[in-house]
Length: 66
Image (tube, rainbow, N blue to C red; front, side, top):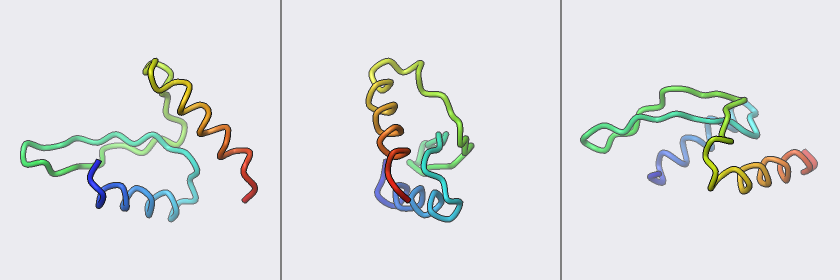
């Protein structure tokens, strides 16, 4: 993910007070990223290689004091 897209995601998350969200993007032929969907309860379990790290990161975030 390009740095400017990552910065935009952080800004969006901060603006809406989200601590977790699954975002869907399309990347055009010219490399332009388009945000398609913001899902605050998105599923990720079907991605076996990411299941444990994402679950651990969410649990760590939820345990963190605001």
